[in-house]
Image (cartoon, rainbow, N blue to C red):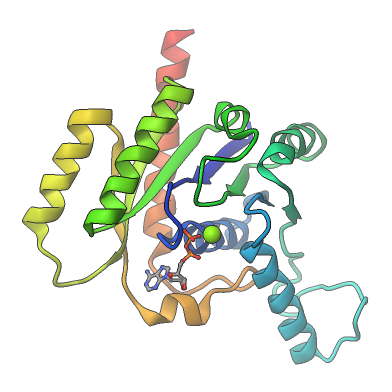
Length: 236
Ligand SMILES: Nc1ncnc2c1ncn2[C@@H]1O[C@H](COP(=O)(O)OP(=O)(O)O)[C@@H](O)[C@H]1O
Ligand SMILES: [Mg+2]
């Protein structure tokens, strides 16, 4: 069964695209069937990163434009990245699910819910992950995001992941916010935190996985998805 995952936040710049790229590229590198729908119209920063990665790679491998790209090192073809609007994403998702045998489809979306079709899209997701920074505006945006998701779909699993976290952040402050999130929306809160580091943006690549700790995040998300499945099975 294909699992559909999206990072969502009513605020730009929290790390949605970064986490989407890290997660998709890592999953693909360990052999999972992955596809991405870049529904962040019109920025399409996922697609732009992919285009740049392909050009870089072709340059490195001395290939001419238009030639089919095969990674010399791994012989693995890069996973597909498809551009869409949020409205088109639901349709693209349905056809991907039926036409390809995929383990995961990741959908990168804009930092606003004020777009046509967001309600349908939320209905098609298995897991929503809300990235949040440890600062007031981001926390407020995360609360609004969770509230909006709950009003559109009372059943979908919501989780929260801390991003751009400083190693010396105030742990008690973070935990107080976690309690606050739990008291209102009871999301799963990832133990994994994306630490603030300039390396993230420097090394971000949709073809070559980064030597970052993202495997911990993927493991945790996998365990979480299994527990959701368990719950669904019990309900049926
Ligand atoms: N962990 C991190 N540490 C430092 N900078 C980060 C981190 N995650 C993301 N960024 C930077 O923050 C900016 C916004 O990230 P992005 O993933 O594009 O956010 P969004 O998709 O939510 O708008 C980018 O410049 C990105 O490089
Ligand atoms: Mg983005």
